[in-house]
Image (tube, rainbow, N blue to C red; front, side, top):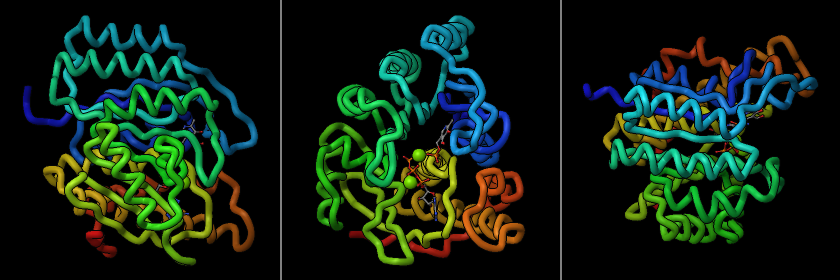
Length: 295
Ligand code: ATP
Ligand code: PLP
Ligand code: MG
Ligand code: MG
């Protein structure tokens, strides 16, 4: 093997727009990663659009795709990335895949984005929670929940920074090496707070709020954090700064472009698709404007 990092990413595919693999694969490739992708669904667009059309990959089909990789001996990966999934069985299948990939590479890094909900609401079936908590989270090297997801997994509410630290410690105790909270409302009117911890040290970073709703940003976050952890030799502070710098540039550019054609009110989803292609140079070399601080 050469030393090119190799990722297997199991996520959604959309024909138009950027969520799941569509928001993860391009940034990873731009940053020098080989990416193999399994598409758990193929939808025309993401689910915030009015009409949802497309297909879901069933477990046997997912298993069969992995079987082909194994048989052809192309199942050596340095990283494994998973995101949005709606069925407990598919998560159990993913757990089997991790164990299988670790037979080929015991140092495989599993990056788990436990996508379950946001702002106090679950948007996947409730039966998913115990499978994340008891099966997948203990296998994760890097976990990237948002605030709500971290609270669900640990059963601990996060009302302030102390609560956040308790939640993070509980996730470490469950076996997670690096815990990253992609966003929390522990900031102020203008800023959310992101947090990253290796158990040894914990960092927080402000995330200036943009007045629009984006989709695919959580998936982009997980992919970027994976990439920058690797590229910085597991420097969580720098990885968090690079990740947030990239997201902030893309989100602001996407918002400004959308606003230019929608001067007031809520912007329809087709105008807030992430401007990834237009921000290729930002992805390659994000300029850090906001620093993370140790807490
Ligand atoms: P996950 O997918 O990990 O469960 P999530 O879907 O809740 O998390 P997002 O809310 O999309 O994740 O946030 C991921 C990142 O995207 C944030 O850290 C932030 O950098 C950026 N982001 C998303 N929405 C906004 C916004 N309205 N304003 C500013 N930044 C945003
Ligand atoms: N995959 C699909 C098909 C979706 O529709 C969505 C959100 O609507 C996502 C993934 C996750 O998006 P996000 O990265 O914003 O959490
Ligand atoms: Mg969110
Ligand atoms: Mg998400």
